[in-house]
Length: 126
Image 1: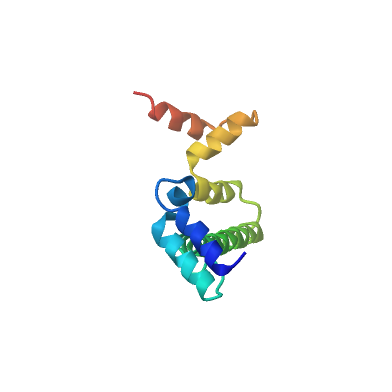
Image 2: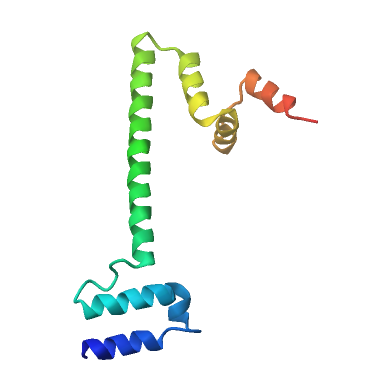
């Protein structure tokens, strides 16, 4: 297939087509220009730029998550170094996930709620 045949096919997909609904006229024109210039077909297209942005966001979130896990581990080491302090560990977890998540986890795993957790639930009643 020649470049021009590919370009003609892409141009024919403009308008009210499923292809055009996803890519749009601007992307189709960019693809045609890329074919004409012997560039990668996705270069400069909106969908490609969106994918790059999402990949950057994903990488940033991954770094942030890894840092948070690292920091949590270091805090646990500090607490354990001072001697086992159940309340300090509970407060650390509570600060990270919140009381609601702790209570849900305990219920799901048939763990007993503390008096403070029960008081918290009672305080939420109308």
